[in-house]
Length: 78
Image 1 (cartoon, one colour):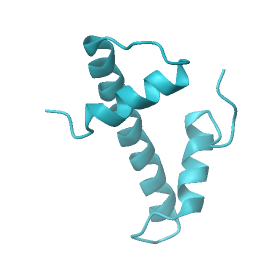
Image 2 (image 1 turned 90 degrees about the horizontal axis):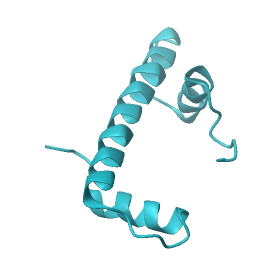
Image 3 (image 1 turned 180 degrees about the horizontal axis):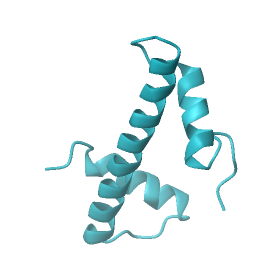
Image 4 (image 1 turned 60 degrees about the vertical axis):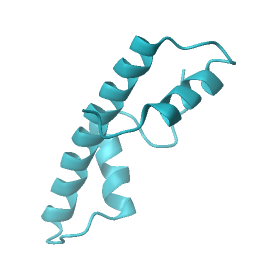
């Protein structure tokens, strides 16, 4: 069972696509991909915090993890 609710994912997909309708299976796939990305982000950010001998993930860890994953947080979407 997904941990992320499909409603906000569907809303974001609809808004970012200019109001297009989004099929149920597309929402399900987007939820699964979002969860997978957040797990990778959490792992990378956790490694950053652990390297600095901290048990708390901070903003800088997320920023560094995003760079490691190949896309900065402020990079424009294509």
